[in-house]
Image (cartoon, rainbow, N blue to C red; front, side, top):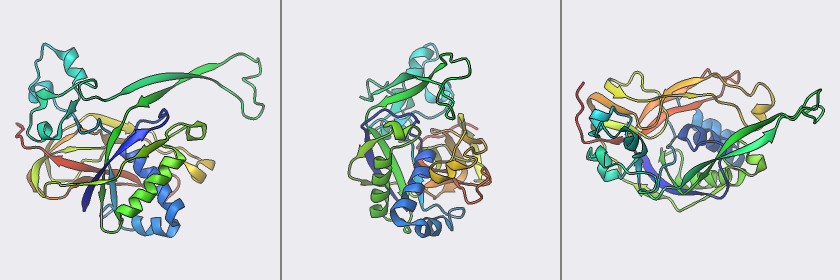
Length: 295
């Protein structure tokens, strides 16, 4: 499998965080629209045994997230907890060499991200009024104004870089995440570059939410992440809601009993929807960490 990177530049606010499992789902829809349903079915036929595509979260350009480790394992000053929480980005070199205490803030990493609250009014879509009393019923939704984001893609031989470029272009034109019909989630992206990755190691960090079970893992450190998913496109017309999925969030540290050779970890997730063919990305790209952790 080959690892590629591109930089996504938002051209509008995002109403959904840029997470790898969500972007994978939208790319599946884009494959269906761009190449046809038979192409998508062929790619998903062996997805439970080996993924044809694994997608990372969006990160500050030329940086990686700080691992989800206790402060003492990160080498941080315990008296500076407030400052430590703001230091969230590491260069790839510092991450892989274990220099976690050198993490940077958004400003130091030249990463722009802010949250904007948009006020809306609840409507009854049968009557197009608020409610029987006619009362004003406002609510707010958070949107993210994001700067450029690096996103990584791991491809098998069954899915070419050209296929990925065309599929991502479809997502860029459709809009990523919710509220795309009102102009949210649109972006452009740069040319893809191939990224070399290690063939084997014992300690890794994940780059998207994933399932860590059944992998001969000696120990792991992670923050839990619950995905409350919904169907999109024509599957949203009938029972759009999926069952919640509990995963390990991006930045999890995984230590194996012995050398691990795959560039990804995790498994496919199924059975969380009334639509039997629905699949969720429980895989994650992993990066090797040259540091030992006490078990």
